[in-house]
Length: 186
Image (tube, rainbow, N blue to C red; front, side, top):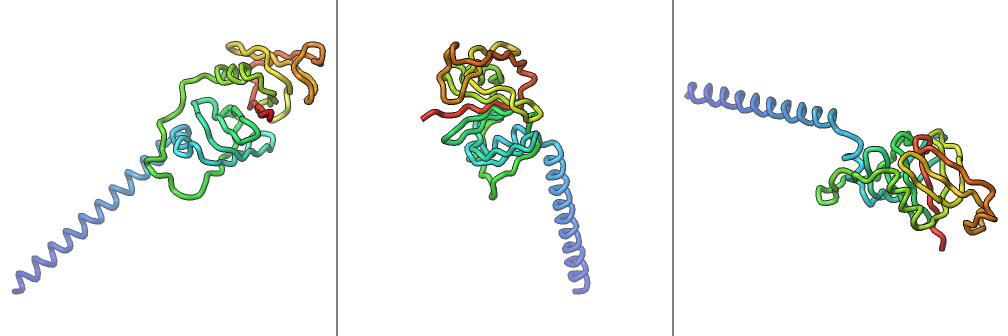
């Protein structure tokens, strides 16, 4: 009987040691996974959910997360849409609660920043262009989006984009842009 109790005790110690080793391995794997996580796949888990962003210059946006890519993210509300360069984002305030695996989306789009801006050009949306530092660069209607620059027709807010109402036409390098807001006219 003493042998039985000794072996039972040794087996219990071995089982506890195995459980402790398994807990340590799981904790180490979680640390490694968290250490190698990247921004884009992490953001894509929140696709379609409302986020609050703090941008350079102190601007804050609260909008629904849309498509993302390595160098920009898209956001929208009923009143406006934004294309924000990743370099212009200071922080994200994420929604509460866990995201289920079914709610997760594949990592971002291969669509270029300039291509997204061409969509705004095609829609003739009224745009407000901001610098990487958060200052206003121009407000008006896009007339051209090239590979590395855009041209915007600057005109009064209440006027249509017509050359005679335009105060100027600005060429802005895409590298200077922090984000572009397109206002939905309804």
